[in-house]
Image (cartoon, rainbow, N blue to C red):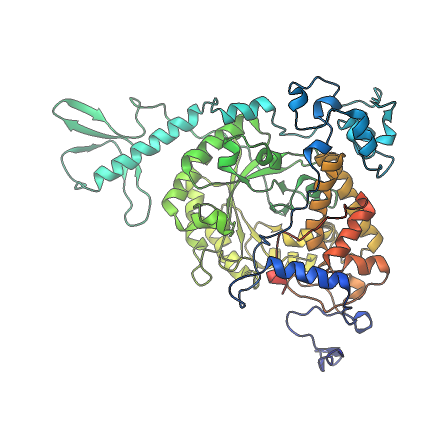
Length: 605
Protein backbone atom coordinates (compact mmCIF):
# COMPACT_ATOMS: atom_id res chain seq x y z
CA UNK A 1 0.00 0.00 0.00
CA UNK A 2 1.48 3.34 -1.09
CA UNK A 3 1.43 6.44 1.05
CA UNK A 4 -1.23 9.01 0.12
CA UNK A 5 -0.08 12.00 -1.82
CA UNK A 6 1.10 14.94 0.23
CA UNK A 7 -1.32 17.88 0.47
CA UNK A 8 -0.78 20.66 -2.01
CA UNK A 9 1.61 23.40 -0.97
CA UNK A 10 0.35 26.83 0.08
CA UNK A 11 2.16 30.14 0.20
CA UNK A 12 2.45 32.01 3.49
CA UNK A 13 2.20 35.79 3.91
CA UNK A 14 5.75 36.24 2.59
CA UNK A 15 5.12 34.13 -0.51
CA UNK A 16 7.18 31.19 0.78
CA UNK A 17 5.75 27.79 -0.18
CA UNK A 18 4.89 25.57 2.79
CA UNK A 19 3.20 22.19 2.66
CA UNK A 20 -0.43 22.27 3.70
CA UNK A 21 -1.14 20.28 6.84
CA UNK A 22 -4.40 18.46 7.32
CA UNK A 23 -6.32 19.43 10.47
CA UNK A 24 -5.50 17.15 13.38
CA UNK A 25 -2.33 15.79 11.73
CA UNK A 26 1.07 16.73 13.10
CA UNK A 27 3.43 18.21 10.46
CA UNK A 28 6.25 15.64 10.17
CA UNK A 29 9.12 16.20 7.77
CA UNK A 30 8.80 13.98 4.72
CA UNK A 31 12.17 12.30 5.20
CA UNK A 32 11.00 10.79 8.51
CA UNK A 33 7.60 9.49 7.36
CA UNK A 34 7.42 5.73 6.76
CA UNK A 35 4.85 3.05 6.09
CA UNK A 36 3.81 1.34 9.32
CA UNK A 37 5.38 -2.14 9.46
CA UNK A 38 3.09 -5.10 10.07
CA UNK A 39 4.64 -7.45 12.62
CA UNK A 40 3.46 -10.33 14.76
CA UNK A 41 3.82 -8.14 17.85
CA UNK A 42 1.64 -5.45 16.31
CA UNK A 43 -1.03 -7.99 15.38
CA UNK A 44 -0.96 -9.46 18.86
CA UNK A 45 -1.30 -6.03 20.44
CA UNK A 46 -4.12 -5.07 18.06
CA UNK A 47 -5.98 -8.20 19.15
CA UNK A 48 -5.43 -7.32 22.81
CA UNK A 49 -6.71 -3.79 22.17
CA UNK A 50 -9.73 -5.17 20.32
CA UNK A 51 -10.55 -7.56 23.17
CA UNK A 52 -10.59 -4.68 25.63
CA UNK A 53 -12.90 -2.60 23.46
CA UNK A 54 -15.57 -5.26 22.70
CA UNK A 55 -18.96 -3.58 22.96
CA UNK A 56 -22.45 -4.28 21.74
CA UNK A 57 -22.28 -1.25 19.48
CA UNK A 58 -19.71 -1.26 16.68
CA UNK A 59 -19.92 2.53 16.49
CA UNK A 60 -19.13 3.13 20.16
CA UNK A 61 -16.28 5.61 20.47
CA UNK A 62 -13.06 4.72 22.22
CA UNK A 63 -13.06 6.89 25.31
CA UNK A 64 -12.30 6.81 29.00
CA UNK A 65 -10.59 3.77 30.44
CA UNK A 66 -9.61 0.32 29.25
CA UNK A 67 -11.75 -1.46 31.81
CA UNK A 68 -10.91 -5.03 30.72
CA UNK A 69 -7.20 -4.76 31.17
CA UNK A 70 -5.11 -7.86 31.88
CA UNK A 71 -3.75 -8.27 35.38
CA UNK A 72 -0.08 -7.26 35.40
CA UNK A 73 1.00 -8.84 38.70
CA UNK A 74 2.36 -12.36 38.39
CA UNK A 75 3.80 -12.82 41.91
CA UNK A 76 2.07 -14.92 44.56
CA UNK A 77 2.35 -14.05 48.24
CA UNK A 78 3.94 -17.42 49.03
CA UNK A 79 6.80 -16.50 46.72
CA UNK A 80 7.59 -13.40 48.76
CA UNK A 81 9.67 -13.35 51.93
CA UNK A 82 7.77 -12.31 55.06
CA UNK A 83 8.36 -8.63 55.96
CA UNK A 84 9.00 -9.64 59.59
CA UNK A 85 11.77 -12.00 58.50
CA UNK A 86 13.26 -9.26 56.33
CA UNK A 87 13.27 -6.92 59.34
CA UNK A 88 14.87 -9.71 61.47
CA UNK A 89 11.79 -9.89 63.70
CA UNK A 90 9.47 -12.70 64.83
CA UNK A 91 6.30 -13.17 62.78
CA UNK A 92 3.24 -13.50 65.02
CA UNK A 93 1.43 -15.59 62.38
CA UNK A 94 3.99 -18.39 62.36
CA UNK A 95 3.29 -21.22 59.90
CA UNK A 96 -0.08 -19.70 58.93
CA UNK A 97 1.61 -16.60 57.48
CA UNK A 98 0.76 -16.05 53.84
CA UNK A 99 4.39 -15.14 53.11
CA UNK A 100 7.40 -17.45 52.97
CA UNK A 101 9.62 -17.94 56.05
CA UNK A 102 12.18 -20.21 54.33
CA UNK A 103 15.15 -17.90 53.71
CA UNK A 104 17.30 -20.50 51.94
CA UNK A 105 14.53 -21.54 49.59
CA UNK A 106 13.65 -17.89 48.90
CA UNK A 107 17.24 -16.98 48.01
CA UNK A 108 17.54 -20.00 45.71
CA UNK A 109 14.35 -19.11 43.80
CA UNK A 110 14.95 -15.35 43.89
CA UNK A 111 15.43 -13.88 40.38
CA UNK A 112 18.89 -12.51 39.61
CA UNK A 113 19.75 -8.99 40.68
CA UNK A 114 18.97 -6.24 38.20
CA UNK A 115 21.84 -4.00 39.22
CA UNK A 116 24.58 -3.53 41.77
CA UNK A 117 23.46 -0.19 43.28
CA UNK A 118 20.45 -0.07 45.59
CA UNK A 119 18.80 3.37 45.70
CA UNK A 120 17.81 2.88 49.35
CA UNK A 121 21.30 1.85 50.47
CA UNK A 122 22.92 4.67 48.52
CA UNK A 123 20.54 7.32 49.89
CA UNK A 124 19.85 6.18 53.46
CA UNK A 125 22.58 3.69 54.40
CA UNK A 126 20.08 0.85 54.84
CA UNK A 127 17.73 -1.01 52.53
CA UNK A 128 14.38 -1.80 54.21
CA UNK A 129 13.82 -4.68 51.74
CA UNK A 130 16.95 -6.51 52.89
CA UNK A 131 17.27 -10.00 51.44
CA UNK A 132 14.35 -9.40 49.07
CA UNK A 133 16.04 -6.46 47.34
CA UNK A 134 16.72 -7.04 43.63
CA UNK A 135 19.82 -4.85 43.95
CA UNK A 136 21.00 -6.72 47.02
CA UNK A 137 24.57 -7.41 45.94
CA UNK A 138 25.51 -3.97 47.31
CA UNK A 139 24.25 -4.66 50.86
CA UNK A 140 23.78 -8.43 51.37
CA UNK A 141 26.58 -10.58 52.77
CA UNK A 142 26.32 -14.05 54.36
CA UNK A 143 22.52 -13.89 54.07
CA UNK A 144 22.47 -10.74 56.21
CA UNK A 145 21.45 -7.19 55.38
CA UNK A 146 24.37 -4.78 55.82
CA UNK A 147 23.85 -1.34 57.39
CA UNK A 148 26.18 1.58 56.64
CA UNK A 149 26.02 3.51 59.90
CA UNK A 150 28.01 6.43 58.48
CA UNK A 151 25.27 7.16 55.93
CA UNK A 152 22.32 6.00 58.01
CA UNK A 153 19.47 8.51 58.03
CA UNK A 154 15.67 8.29 58.00
CA UNK A 155 13.53 8.59 54.90
CA UNK A 156 12.11 12.11 54.87
CA UNK A 157 8.94 11.40 52.86
CA UNK A 158 6.03 13.17 54.57
CA UNK A 159 2.41 12.19 55.21
CA UNK A 160 3.25 8.55 55.85
CA UNK A 161 0.34 7.32 57.97
CA UNK A 162 1.18 4.90 60.75
CA UNK A 163 -0.67 1.63 61.23
CA UNK A 164 -2.18 3.01 64.43
CA UNK A 165 -3.52 6.09 62.64
CA UNK A 166 -5.15 3.94 59.98
CA UNK A 167 -6.55 1.58 62.62
CA UNK A 168 -8.08 4.52 64.52
CA UNK A 169 -9.81 5.65 61.36
CA UNK A 170 -11.11 2.19 60.55
CA UNK A 171 -12.44 1.71 64.08
CA UNK A 172 -13.98 5.21 64.11
CA UNK A 173 -11.99 6.21 67.18
CA UNK A 174 -11.24 9.71 65.86
CA UNK A 175 -13.31 12.61 67.18
CA UNK A 176 -14.20 15.61 65.04
CA UNK A 177 -15.40 18.31 67.48
CA UNK A 178 -15.13 21.29 65.13
CA UNK A 179 -16.80 19.45 62.27
CA UNK A 180 -19.61 18.23 64.52
CA UNK A 181 -20.35 21.83 65.54
CA UNK A 182 -20.52 22.94 61.93
CA UNK A 183 -22.63 19.96 60.84
CA UNK A 184 -25.02 20.62 63.73
CA UNK A 185 -25.27 24.26 62.68
CA UNK A 186 -26.01 23.35 59.08
CA UNK A 187 -28.63 20.86 60.22
CA UNK A 188 -30.39 23.55 62.23
CA UNK A 189 -30.25 26.00 59.32
CA UNK A 190 -31.81 23.38 57.06
CA UNK A 191 -34.50 22.73 59.66
CA UNK A 192 -35.19 26.45 60.00
CA UNK A 193 -35.46 26.94 56.25
CA UNK A 194 -37.97 24.11 56.09
CA UNK A 195 -40.09 25.85 58.73
CA UNK A 196 -39.75 29.22 56.99
CA UNK A 197 -40.97 27.72 53.75
CA UNK A 198 -44.35 27.17 55.43
CA UNK A 199 -44.58 30.58 57.14
CA UNK A 200 -45.09 34.13 56.02
CA UNK A 201 -41.88 36.08 56.41
CA UNK A 202 -43.74 38.86 58.28
CA UNK A 203 -45.52 36.46 60.65
CA UNK A 204 -45.68 37.69 64.26
CA UNK A 205 -44.47 34.23 65.36
CA UNK A 206 -40.95 35.23 64.32
CA UNK A 207 -38.58 37.70 65.91
CA UNK A 208 -35.45 38.33 63.89
CA UNK A 209 -32.13 39.25 65.45
CA UNK A 210 -30.74 39.45 61.91
CA UNK A 211 -32.01 37.88 58.73
CA UNK A 212 -31.04 38.21 55.11
CA UNK A 213 -33.15 36.31 52.62
CA UNK A 214 -32.31 35.69 49.00
CA UNK A 215 -34.97 34.15 46.87
CA UNK A 216 -34.99 31.56 44.06
CA UNK A 217 -31.84 29.44 43.90
CA UNK A 218 -29.65 31.67 46.04
CA UNK A 219 -28.62 30.88 49.59
CA UNK A 220 -30.52 32.10 52.65
CA UNK A 221 -28.20 33.45 55.33
CA UNK A 222 -29.62 33.48 58.82
CA UNK A 223 -27.98 34.76 61.99
CA UNK A 224 -30.25 34.25 65.08
CA UNK A 225 -33.84 33.18 64.91
CA UNK A 226 -36.04 32.75 67.93
CA UNK A 227 -39.51 31.34 68.05
CA UNK A 228 -41.84 32.39 70.86
CA UNK A 229 -44.37 29.89 72.22
CA UNK A 230 -46.56 29.39 75.25
CA UNK A 231 -43.87 27.37 77.05
CA UNK A 232 -41.31 30.13 76.60
CA UNK A 233 -38.54 30.98 74.17
CA UNK A 234 -37.03 28.11 72.23
CA UNK A 235 -33.86 28.74 70.22
CA UNK A 236 -33.72 27.11 66.83
CA UNK A 237 -31.25 29.44 65.12
CA UNK A 238 -27.92 28.04 64.05
CA UNK A 239 -25.60 30.72 65.38
CA UNK A 240 -26.69 31.56 68.93
CA UNK A 241 -24.79 31.53 72.20
CA UNK A 242 -27.29 29.13 73.75
CA UNK A 243 -26.70 26.39 71.18
CA UNK A 244 -23.07 26.50 70.15
CA UNK A 245 -19.85 28.37 70.28
CA UNK A 246 -19.56 30.76 67.36
CA UNK A 247 -17.50 29.34 64.51
CA UNK A 248 -14.84 31.87 63.61
CA UNK A 249 -12.72 31.66 60.43
CA UNK A 250 -9.17 30.63 61.16
CA UNK A 251 -6.31 32.76 59.98
CA UNK A 252 -5.60 31.16 56.63
CA UNK A 253 -2.13 30.61 55.30
CA UNK A 254 -1.64 33.01 52.40
CA UNK A 255 -0.25 31.63 49.14
CA UNK A 256 0.57 33.73 46.10
CA UNK A 257 -0.21 31.57 43.07
CA UNK A 258 0.53 34.35 40.56
CA UNK A 259 2.64 33.23 37.60
CA UNK A 260 3.57 29.96 39.25
CA UNK A 261 3.79 26.80 37.13
CA UNK A 262 1.18 24.44 38.50
CA UNK A 263 1.42 20.69 37.85
CA UNK A 264 -2.14 19.37 37.76
CA UNK A 265 -3.28 16.53 40.03
CA UNK A 266 -3.26 13.50 37.73
CA UNK A 267 -4.89 10.19 38.60
CA UNK A 268 -2.52 7.18 38.34
CA UNK A 269 0.26 8.98 36.48
CA UNK A 270 0.61 11.98 38.81
CA UNK A 271 2.37 9.88 41.44
CA UNK A 272 5.20 10.99 43.74
CA UNK A 273 8.06 9.73 41.50
CA UNK A 274 6.61 11.62 38.53
CA UNK A 275 6.11 14.79 40.58
CA UNK A 276 9.78 14.62 41.62
CA UNK A 277 10.73 14.60 37.93
CA UNK A 278 8.58 17.67 37.28
CA UNK A 279 10.04 19.50 40.29
CA UNK A 280 13.58 19.03 38.99
CA UNK A 281 12.44 20.35 35.58
CA UNK A 282 10.87 23.55 36.95
CA UNK A 283 7.36 22.95 38.33
CA UNK A 284 6.52 25.34 41.18
CA UNK A 285 3.31 23.84 42.60
CA UNK A 286 2.47 20.14 42.86
CA UNK A 287 -0.63 18.33 44.04
CA UNK A 288 -1.38 14.75 45.04
CA UNK A 289 -3.44 12.37 42.99
CA UNK A 290 -7.19 12.51 43.59
CA UNK A 291 -7.99 10.76 46.88
CA UNK A 292 -11.54 9.66 47.70
CA UNK A 293 -12.92 11.12 50.92
CA UNK A 294 -14.80 7.99 52.03
CA UNK A 295 -11.77 5.74 51.53
CA UNK A 296 -9.56 8.13 53.50
CA UNK A 297 -11.96 8.27 56.45
CA UNK A 298 -12.17 4.47 56.40
CA UNK A 299 -8.39 4.27 56.81
CA UNK A 300 -7.55 2.57 53.52
CA UNK A 301 -3.78 2.40 53.30
CA UNK A 302 -3.75 2.45 49.48
CA UNK A 303 -5.72 5.71 49.46
CA UNK A 304 -3.52 7.44 52.03
CA UNK A 305 -0.45 6.37 50.01
CA UNK A 306 -1.62 8.78 47.29
CA UNK A 307 -1.00 11.85 49.49
CA UNK A 308 2.62 11.16 50.42
CA UNK A 309 4.83 14.20 49.93
CA UNK A 310 8.49 14.32 48.93
CA UNK A 311 10.71 16.91 50.68
CA UNK A 312 11.41 18.60 47.32
CA UNK A 313 7.70 19.52 47.00
CA UNK A 314 7.93 22.88 48.74
CA UNK A 315 4.42 23.99 47.69
CA UNK A 316 2.17 20.96 47.84
CA UNK A 317 -1.57 20.41 47.87
CA UNK A 318 -3.82 17.45 48.56
CA UNK A 319 -6.74 16.85 46.20
CA UNK A 320 -9.84 15.22 47.66
CA UNK A 321 -13.07 14.07 46.05
CA UNK A 322 -16.37 13.47 47.80
CA UNK A 323 -20.09 14.04 47.62
CA UNK A 324 -21.23 14.80 51.18
CA UNK A 325 -20.69 17.93 53.32
CA UNK A 326 -20.37 16.01 56.60
CA UNK A 327 -17.67 13.60 55.43
CA UNK A 328 -15.65 16.27 53.61
CA UNK A 329 -15.84 18.57 56.64
CA UNK A 330 -14.60 15.81 58.94
CA UNK A 331 -11.82 14.96 56.51
CA UNK A 332 -10.78 18.62 56.51
CA UNK A 333 -10.44 18.55 60.29
CA UNK A 334 -8.36 15.37 60.11
CA UNK A 335 -6.10 16.92 57.45
CA UNK A 336 -5.59 19.93 59.72
CA UNK A 337 -4.36 17.74 62.55
CA UNK A 338 -2.46 14.95 60.79
CA UNK A 339 -1.41 15.89 57.24
CA UNK A 340 1.27 18.34 56.15
CA UNK A 341 -0.07 20.26 53.14
CA UNK A 342 -0.01 23.87 51.95
CA UNK A 343 -3.53 23.80 50.49
CA UNK A 344 -6.43 21.41 49.92
CA UNK A 345 -8.02 21.07 46.48
CA UNK A 346 -11.63 19.96 46.03
CA UNK A 347 -12.17 17.98 42.84
CA UNK A 348 -15.20 19.05 40.79
CA UNK A 349 -13.60 18.14 37.48
CA UNK A 350 -13.47 14.33 37.40
CA UNK A 351 -15.68 13.15 34.50
CA UNK A 352 -15.47 9.41 35.26
CA UNK A 353 -18.94 7.89 35.53
CA UNK A 354 -18.00 5.79 38.57
CA UNK A 355 -17.30 9.01 40.48
CA UNK A 356 -20.10 11.14 39.02
CA UNK A 357 -22.74 8.48 39.65
CA UNK A 358 -21.95 8.79 43.36
CA UNK A 359 -22.65 12.53 43.21
CA UNK A 360 -18.98 13.55 43.34
CA UNK A 361 -16.57 15.04 40.80
CA UNK A 362 -18.20 16.98 37.97
CA UNK A 363 -21.67 15.96 39.14
CA UNK A 364 -21.39 18.42 42.06
CA UNK A 365 -21.47 21.31 39.59
CA UNK A 366 -25.18 20.62 39.18
CA UNK A 367 -25.88 20.63 42.95
CA UNK A 368 -25.28 24.22 44.02
CA UNK A 369 -26.84 23.94 47.49
CA UNK A 370 -24.85 20.85 48.45
CA UNK A 371 -21.71 22.39 46.95
CA UNK A 372 -22.22 25.51 49.05
CA UNK A 373 -22.41 23.45 52.24
CA UNK A 374 -19.27 21.56 51.25
CA UNK A 375 -17.15 24.61 50.43
CA UNK A 376 -18.37 26.58 53.46
CA UNK A 377 -17.71 23.64 55.77
CA UNK A 378 -14.25 22.83 54.44
CA UNK A 379 -13.21 26.49 54.35
CA UNK A 380 -14.48 27.00 57.91
CA UNK A 381 -12.46 24.07 59.27
CA UNK A 382 -9.24 24.23 57.24
CA UNK A 383 -6.32 26.37 58.38
CA UNK A 384 -4.85 26.25 54.87
CA UNK A 385 -6.42 27.67 51.67
CA UNK A 386 -9.17 25.70 49.98
CA UNK A 387 -8.93 25.57 46.18
CA UNK A 388 -11.53 24.15 43.81
CA UNK A 389 -10.90 22.51 40.43
CA UNK A 390 -13.88 22.66 38.08
CA UNK A 391 -14.89 22.27 34.42
CA UNK A 392 -16.98 24.59 32.28
CA UNK A 393 -20.08 22.59 33.21
CA UNK A 394 -21.69 19.21 32.85
CA UNK A 395 -23.10 19.59 29.33
CA UNK A 396 -21.10 20.88 26.37
CA UNK A 397 -23.81 23.32 25.29
CA UNK A 398 -24.65 24.61 28.75
CA UNK A 399 -21.70 26.17 30.58
CA UNK A 400 -22.35 27.02 34.23
CA UNK A 401 -18.90 27.82 35.63
CA UNK A 402 -19.37 31.59 35.17
CA UNK A 403 -22.31 31.43 37.59
CA UNK A 404 -20.61 29.21 40.16
CA UNK A 405 -17.23 30.94 40.34
CA UNK A 406 -18.47 34.22 41.96
CA UNK A 407 -20.48 32.17 44.46
CA UNK A 408 -17.46 30.03 45.36
CA UNK A 409 -15.61 33.22 46.19
CA UNK A 410 -18.36 34.15 48.68
CA UNK A 411 -18.50 30.63 50.10
CA UNK A 412 -14.81 30.67 51.11
CA UNK A 413 -12.74 29.28 48.23
CA UNK A 414 -9.30 30.88 47.94
CA UNK A 415 -8.68 29.92 44.32
CA UNK A 416 -10.48 28.21 41.44
CA UNK A 417 -8.85 26.21 38.65
CA UNK A 418 -10.94 25.94 35.50
CA UNK A 419 -10.45 23.24 32.87
CA UNK A 420 -11.84 24.65 29.63
CA UNK A 421 -13.94 21.58 28.76
CA UNK A 422 -17.22 20.19 30.04
CA UNK A 423 -17.76 16.82 31.71
CA UNK A 424 -19.45 15.64 28.52
CA UNK A 425 -16.41 16.57 26.40
CA UNK A 426 -13.92 14.88 28.72
CA UNK A 427 -10.70 15.59 26.73
CA UNK A 428 -12.04 15.90 23.18
CA UNK A 429 -11.93 19.10 21.11
CA UNK A 430 -9.99 22.13 22.28
CA UNK A 431 -10.22 23.90 25.63
CA UNK A 432 -12.29 27.10 25.52
CA UNK A 433 -9.86 29.77 26.72
CA UNK A 434 -12.23 32.62 25.87
CA UNK A 435 -14.69 31.20 28.37
CA UNK A 436 -11.88 30.68 30.89
CA UNK A 437 -11.02 34.38 30.56
CA UNK A 438 -14.67 35.33 31.05
CA UNK A 439 -14.82 33.28 34.26
CA UNK A 440 -11.53 34.76 35.49
CA UNK A 441 -13.03 38.26 35.15
CA UNK A 442 -16.11 37.13 37.07
CA UNK A 443 -13.95 35.63 39.83
CA UNK A 444 -11.92 38.79 40.52
CA UNK A 445 -10.37 39.55 42.93
CA UNK A 446 -10.18 35.81 43.68
CA UNK A 447 -7.42 34.25 41.53
CA UNK A 448 -8.45 31.84 38.79
CA UNK A 449 -6.02 29.46 37.07
CA UNK A 450 -6.69 28.21 33.55
CA UNK A 451 -6.10 24.67 32.38
CA UNK A 452 -6.17 22.98 28.98
CA UNK A 453 -4.04 22.21 25.91
CA UNK A 454 -0.73 23.78 26.95
CA UNK A 455 2.20 21.97 25.32
CA UNK A 456 4.73 24.75 24.66
CA UNK A 457 5.93 28.04 26.07
CA UNK A 458 4.11 29.78 23.21
CA UNK A 459 0.80 28.29 24.37
CA UNK A 460 1.62 29.47 27.88
CA UNK A 461 2.44 33.04 26.85
CA UNK A 462 -0.62 33.28 24.63
CA UNK A 463 -3.00 32.36 27.44
CA UNK A 464 -1.26 34.32 30.21
CA UNK A 465 -0.95 37.52 28.16
CA UNK A 466 -4.33 37.45 26.41
CA UNK A 467 -6.68 36.28 29.18
CA UNK A 468 -7.56 37.34 32.72
CA UNK A 469 -6.12 34.25 34.41
CA UNK A 470 -3.72 34.43 37.34
CA UNK A 471 -1.69 31.52 36.04
CA UNK A 472 -1.94 28.18 34.25
CA UNK A 473 -2.13 24.55 35.29
CA UNK A 474 -0.43 21.95 33.08
CA UNK A 475 -1.76 18.39 32.94
CA UNK A 476 -1.38 16.23 29.81
CA UNK A 477 1.30 18.61 28.53
CA UNK A 478 3.49 17.61 31.48
CA UNK A 479 2.87 13.91 30.84
CA UNK A 480 3.82 14.24 27.17
CA UNK A 481 6.87 16.45 27.83
CA UNK A 482 7.67 17.10 31.51
CA UNK A 483 10.45 19.48 30.43
CA UNK A 484 7.71 21.93 29.39
CA UNK A 485 8.32 23.71 32.72
CA UNK A 486 11.94 24.33 31.70
CA UNK A 487 10.84 25.55 28.26
CA UNK A 488 8.40 28.02 29.80
CA UNK A 489 10.90 29.44 32.28
CA UNK A 490 13.62 29.74 29.64
CA UNK A 491 11.14 30.62 26.84
CA UNK A 492 12.67 28.31 24.28
CA UNK A 493 11.90 25.14 22.36
CA UNK A 494 14.14 22.42 23.75
CA UNK A 495 15.14 19.87 21.09
CA UNK A 496 15.81 17.30 23.78
CA UNK A 497 17.74 14.25 22.61
CA UNK A 498 16.57 10.66 22.98
CA UNK A 499 19.43 9.99 25.41
CA UNK A 500 18.34 12.89 27.61
CA UNK A 501 14.77 11.63 27.58
CA UNK A 502 15.95 8.13 28.47
CA UNK A 503 17.87 9.55 31.44
CA UNK A 504 14.62 11.11 32.64
CA UNK A 505 13.06 7.65 32.47
CA UNK A 506 15.99 6.28 34.46
CA UNK A 507 15.45 8.91 37.16
CA UNK A 508 11.77 7.99 37.28
CA UNK A 509 12.66 4.31 37.68
CA UNK A 510 15.02 5.12 40.56
CA UNK A 511 12.39 7.36 42.17
CA UNK A 512 9.88 4.54 41.79
CA UNK A 513 12.19 1.97 43.39
CA UNK A 514 12.69 4.33 46.31
CA UNK A 515 8.94 4.98 46.63
CA UNK A 516 7.38 1.56 45.87
CA UNK A 517 10.27 -0.67 46.84
CA UNK A 518 13.25 -2.46 45.33
CA UNK A 519 11.92 -5.97 45.87
CA UNK A 520 10.04 -7.90 43.17
CA UNK A 521 6.68 -6.34 44.08
CA UNK A 522 8.16 -2.85 44.06
CA UNK A 523 9.76 -3.44 40.67
CA UNK A 524 6.44 -4.59 39.22
CA UNK A 525 4.71 -1.47 40.57
CA UNK A 526 7.44 0.77 39.23
CA UNK A 527 7.24 -0.95 35.83
CA UNK A 528 3.46 -0.60 35.72
CA UNK A 529 3.52 3.14 36.46
CA UNK A 530 6.42 3.65 34.05
CA UNK A 531 4.40 1.98 31.29
CA UNK A 532 1.35 4.09 32.15
CA UNK A 533 3.50 7.21 31.76
CA UNK A 534 4.97 5.94 28.48
CA UNK A 535 1.41 5.71 27.12
CA UNK A 536 1.51 9.53 27.22
CA UNK A 537 5.23 10.19 26.79
CA UNK A 538 5.43 8.47 23.40
CA UNK A 539 3.16 11.18 21.96
CA UNK A 540 5.99 13.71 22.11
CA UNK A 541 7.31 14.53 18.64
CA UNK A 542 10.97 15.67 18.58
CA UNK A 543 11.47 19.20 17.33
CA UNK A 544 13.99 18.06 14.73
CA UNK A 545 11.33 15.80 13.19
CA UNK A 546 8.59 18.44 13.01
CA UNK A 547 8.04 20.49 9.85
CA UNK A 548 7.11 23.42 12.05
CA UNK A 549 6.90 24.06 15.78
CA UNK A 550 5.26 23.96 18.23
CA UNK A 551 3.52 20.61 18.43
CA UNK A 552 -0.22 20.86 19.15
CA UNK A 553 -1.56 18.63 21.90
CA UNK A 554 -4.39 17.05 19.91
CA UNK A 555 -2.48 16.54 16.66
CA UNK A 556 -1.68 12.95 15.75
CA UNK A 557 1.42 12.22 13.67
CA UNK A 558 1.59 9.78 10.77
CA UNK A 559 3.89 6.82 11.35
CA UNK A 560 7.46 8.13 11.43
CA UNK A 561 10.97 7.18 12.48
CA UNK A 562 13.29 9.18 14.68
CA UNK A 563 16.79 10.43 14.11
CA UNK A 564 18.21 7.33 15.79
CA UNK A 565 16.99 3.93 16.95
CA UNK A 566 16.31 5.04 20.53
CA UNK A 567 14.24 8.02 19.35
CA UNK A 568 12.25 5.70 17.07
CA UNK A 569 11.66 3.27 19.94
CA UNK A 570 10.48 6.06 22.26
CA UNK A 571 7.99 7.32 19.67
CA UNK A 572 6.39 3.90 19.13
CA UNK A 573 2.67 3.49 19.78
CA UNK A 574 3.14 -0.25 20.39
CA UNK A 575 2.90 -1.44 24.00
CA UNK A 576 5.52 -4.09 23.23
CA UNK A 577 8.08 -1.34 22.57
CA UNK A 578 7.21 0.38 25.85
CA UNK A 579 7.87 -2.91 27.61
CA UNK A 580 11.29 -3.07 25.88
CA UNK A 581 12.10 0.36 27.31
CA UNK A 582 11.07 -0.81 30.78
CA UNK A 583 13.31 -3.87 30.44
CA UNK A 584 16.27 -1.60 29.72
CA UNK A 585 15.70 -0.05 33.16
CA UNK A 586 14.05 -2.70 35.33
CA UNK A 587 15.14 -6.04 33.90
CA UNK A 588 13.28 -8.69 31.92
CA UNK A 589 9.54 -9.07 32.44
CA UNK A 590 8.03 -12.49 33.30
CA UNK A 591 7.04 -14.65 30.32
CA UNK A 592 3.30 -14.19 31.02
CA UNK A 593 3.51 -10.41 31.46
CA UNK A 594 0.84 -8.38 29.64
CA UNK A 595 0.09 -4.66 29.71
CA UNK A 596 -2.62 -2.39 28.36
CA UNK A 597 -2.68 1.30 29.34
CA UNK A 598 -5.39 2.52 31.69
CA UNK A 599 -6.42 5.51 29.61
CA UNK A 600 -7.59 5.50 26.00
CA UNK A 601 -6.40 8.45 23.94
CA UNK A 602 -9.73 9.48 22.45
CA UNK A 603 -8.62 13.10 22.15
CA UNK A 604 -5.53 11.95 20.30
CA UNK A 605 -7.55 10.25 17.57
